[in-house]
Amino acid sequence: MTFTVCFHGAESTGKSVLAERLSRELGIPWVPEYGRTYAERHGTDFTMEDLLAIAAGQAEATSAALAAQPPLLILDTDQLMTAAWAEMLFSEVPAALLAYPKADLYLHFAADVPWVADGTRFFGTPEERRRFADLAQEHLIHAGVRWLPVTGTWEDRARTVGNILRRGPLEPGPGSWSTLAGS
Image (cartoon, rainbow, N blue to C red; front, side):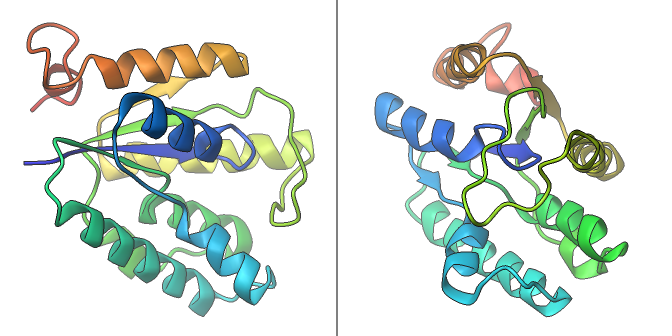
């Protein structure tokens, strides 16, 4: 059975960069953020239908990665984050976004590092970032999923997340993923 760890949180907090880096360094497969590919292809003038399409595309990519049955899979976002986007952009969340399967563990990246504009990001002011980060965390709480905070500098984040991923099910006992996720 595959243990899924989802990188979650406001934009420009290091999720995608760290997912790709740790995937390469630790030899762990990862599912990139489908929303970025979608935005680069279709633009960022999103409708709710676009968010539903992004959620479906993320689910397809995740299903394809799960078919290989790796022991661990990094998800660079999932539909709970798309739900936060829906709430942030449209002040509503379609039930379909909350019905998707959940990851075994979420790593919630705080918006406490500098924001970097890259052409696909929306919420760069401190107030917007704080609101988006709060919404993302609220979605984790309301979904009742297991999650851990990721804070600090870029180096702190890399060390924290790397340590969490290294502690996985291959090393049973206190601090293993199964203990962290309450499995």
